[in-house]
Length: 391
Image (cartoon, rainbow, N blue to C red; front, top):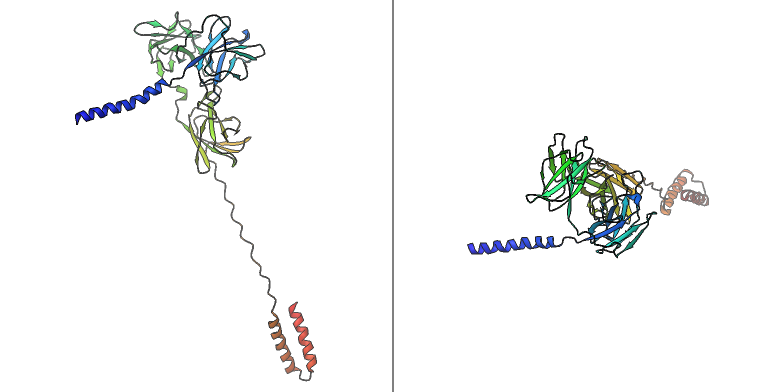
């Protein structure tokens, strides 16, 4: 029995591990895109997606590109990418960007952007030499004291001491609209330091695992480390939607504005589930914008601004008329059924036989009262009575 049990355990191990290995082997291939932009643009960003709406990056404006040479920049994207937008100066009053630029999926691409923001795409290299090999990186977020004027990221591999950057204090981190600074380090590092003011102040060594992290640094240089955005560590909320009768298969697209972080990987978002007259879906509690779309995204609402962290009910009358509440709207009162109009029966005309009978009675009475009236006179009176009763 022990041998049988051992064999079963081995088989179970194989069944579990084979799918995991296959999944690991499906890692997306990365290909480079090189871009040259006008000098007024500064460092460009790249936004990229596939025909089916799958985005390469979590939030607009995408990823900052790396300097290459002679005014060129480069960035590696997943091989599924078929469209890109090059943009820059997003944190200024005059942001710039190209239109949708089509590229061949899985191919190295070179794009030249003109002063009028138009783009020319070429697949042949426009520089001598090769684009640096792809290095997988992870994002480091840091929230630091206001007294820090600059923020830098230093990273290395312990205990061998291999540094990710050429010289201390490392790579400058970029400040976002939410007050967090971001930088990137190769996934092979396991240690980092956040420093400020050109390296004058710094944290102690921070142990990491090569995955995205958030570091909150305090005035006394102590820190808290998290693998989730502290601003978005909230419970999911439910979006309820009521749609027009000619809308079918509704989906929900949701994101956080103005940073542009999407709740779902690809447009048109996720399908909703019908619960009686409402369609519902759970979304992250940090979202503050939604779009309800249907008919395979052929119809949709405009952007709907909502309060983060609250369940919402969206009543769509049509694409341009939407009502939002944070409590379920009261059901419309049913109109009482109207009482049917009373049936008025028409008086029935007396039949000829009834009239004749009445005439006969009257005639008989006339005979008793007036015995001297002639027979012809009695018949005439009866005929007159009959005619009156039939009217």
